[in-house]
Image 1 (cartoon, rainbow, N blue to C red):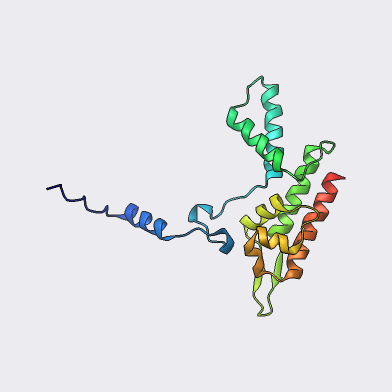
Image 2: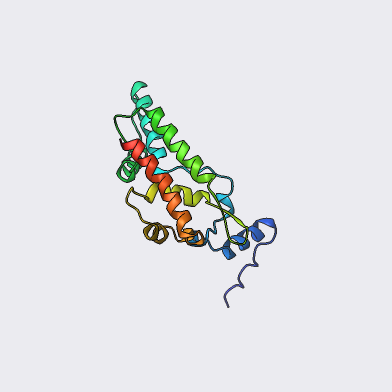
Length: 170
């Protein structure tokens, strides 16, 4: 007969693994694993600026860029809607940081008096997905967790993004 299966592992590592298996990540409901606690999320536009500065520095040091670096840069450049080659890097960084701060500190009170705020995932998704012509319905379809906000609040959020995009591209 075949040998019996080994007993399940015991101890804190096994308990953590069991908890991890029970936890279901769900972006629409803003359920993320503990590894996403206390992290700073960047938008594609912010990553693009960081990579551009880093690439210039590498060129100045006569270093070749790694293939993963080039692929990442190509990806963020492709999906970066907040760019203007005529603007200084610092000006773009300031605009993007100001937008991220505005979205991160955005608060709306519900009829029940509960204060709602955007989560980091929503801030980055909004900065990555929203265009100047994005309507409330489209934003909620792209980021389902926004449905917890009243339509007027989502429109206010979109206005923050639109005004920043207009300042960046003009």
